[in-house]
Amino acid sequence: MTFEPYARSFFERLADAVAHDLIGADIVIHGEDRTLRARIVETEAYGGSDDPASHAFRGPTPRCAVMFGAAGFLYVYRSYGIHWCMNVVTERAGSASAVLLRAAEVRVAAEDPAGAGTRGVLLRGPGNLTRGLGISGADGGEDCCQGLGGRITFQDAADAVGSSHIGRSRRIGISRGQERLSRYFLEGHPAVCRIPSPAPR
Image 1 (spheres, rainbow, N blue to C red):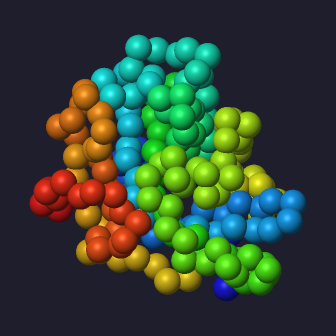
Image 2: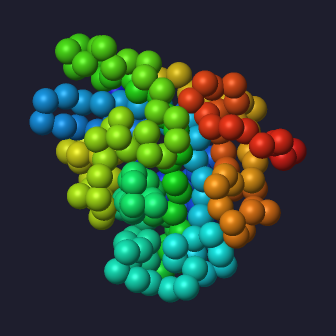
């Protein structure tokens, strides 16, 4: 079963709403020799000028300029000079909010049987996620709302996840804005990173 990729309107919402609704959704990446499909199981929402943990907190810089643009574009940055982190921009242009993709499970597209050996691979943590999906700084600024012809898109999965299975907690690995309950995850999934005590829904 094939679903239409998410339109820009999906991402033109509050970052927390998008972060929640991406849990259980698929990210689809069309490469030259294979198509990768991965189920998103952990995300974090980041605001702009009102979120001290956001790269956009102090205003636009060459590094985070894409966050100040239209929703549905990728913001990819290198963390600690070691690994890439992938975010998708949300809300209206100028708000500079985004959702960090933290974990996923690879599910190879049906039309790509040659890649069956990668099915079920757990991509735990944002660095492992980008490595597993082949995402790098070259993908920064990619428009994920170009429809079926786009290289990177997001879409519903055939086995949808109900809200009752989506947990929420404080974000991980930050020193500011720790009080925000802006981390979302598929409860019980083995790819999800260490889980702090969850907040009531």
